[in-house]
Length: 50
Length: 579
View 1 (tube, rainbow over the protein chains, first blue to last red):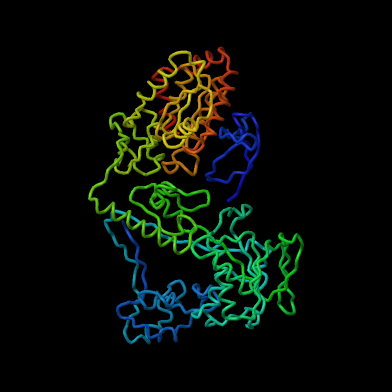
View 2: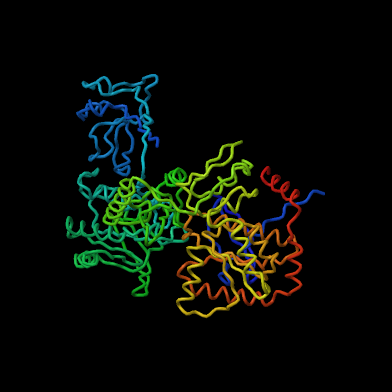
């Protein structure tokens, strides 16, 4: 299954990092810096029509 | 339950296994049971101990029965046992309990190219070794190497091929490979005392009754154990011998070993049908891909779905003895359930108000137990005997049509408002799941751990019970920080209900940001019942965050998150369902 690089931000310490994500994966996430589970998946914004 | 009984195309009551059909069958295929080391015909007995002892016809291999292109087997069968018109049979049974014992698959080492499994004929897997050394195998138990059919004099075994290797997505120990290799070395030493055996390993895990003794016997029999996994295998094109390069980590030096044959001690992987069974019985998987039990210590043979039990490898890698123990326990548990004649269900279950239900089916989609039956255009119905009471459906329903007994929206909202009734700015508000996070708080307490006194906890059965409205209401009541906490992924007591929590918190972060409220004020943590220390640590971190939240921020959140007029909210909910 193809993996994509996605951006995550820790809502506790603010650390932002990228991780490869496979479609449909079921994985518990934690911040690589502070180990918090408050990990926000920053979705790519779709391009707006001009 | 519907069971498919596959067509055999040979009547087992008539067939007397005379073998005449095999003699005339013109199709030759690799024998799967012998790991492709010998061949079989299109009509065959799958393995020597098969019950019933009668032939089966593999229609995928047969030259064709419609129209009949060959028909030789039918011609020679005196008993007329062959029936080309045989069809799969669907058997319907009413059953009260299911024991899942679907076994395992073996790791395919082709991706680990450094060991040359696909390049060198004399590199085999431990399964192929089993067939070669077995008296019922393709060589009748005479151990020969595949390239020249000569008896090898030096054999190497590489351990942990496909096990304990996170790089290939197999971080777990396969449990059986160490003892299997030790057994193999003892067999070789017994059959061929002059043979040199070398085992390359990272750890020998010989726990279990008499296992350490067996390991010592293997060493005494002359097997050399070298700590270190080979990095390279090369073949001499003339002799077809193999040179293995390994760092001996005990001696701290690089070694080269010339061997006649190499056996890859392959690990085990979850069976390929596991996902299919998982879908049928609403079972969940661990991160390793095996079935997850209801509780690792207290219910090790129970599935989270009631009435379903596990036996053997499908739950986790284990040896024969443990599999037999688990099978015994599973059948006892199953027997106890069936003999009871009646079942007790939890008092905490969902109830759907048919008049309020908008027939959207969202509740059925999030139920981890498949306990909600929904058909398009009809109101959803809860099967109470299957409902475990996580409350994910109640938190998902946008129309307030679902009531969770003992954890109703009104009860939880009242707790939120009461907790934050006075001086909310001084409190860290927490939702904690009953089984893990709340118990983690208890653990912190009974362990006499210090943590700030500002936290206030509202208990729900599962973190998935916490609806968006409850979190927003906490902010409206003036909470500076809100924590939603639940079980770790592998520990979720409601199969995978806490995945709904993650989705909901992600949505809430977006909503808060849109409303101009700092999303960091909402936190999510997985805290297990044993993690009292983590509970205390999180409370310190949140207290620090709370102190940084200003009164202006709290007031802004109160205003910005005010509920919208009812009609607009209803319209929005309906639009969400439609999308």
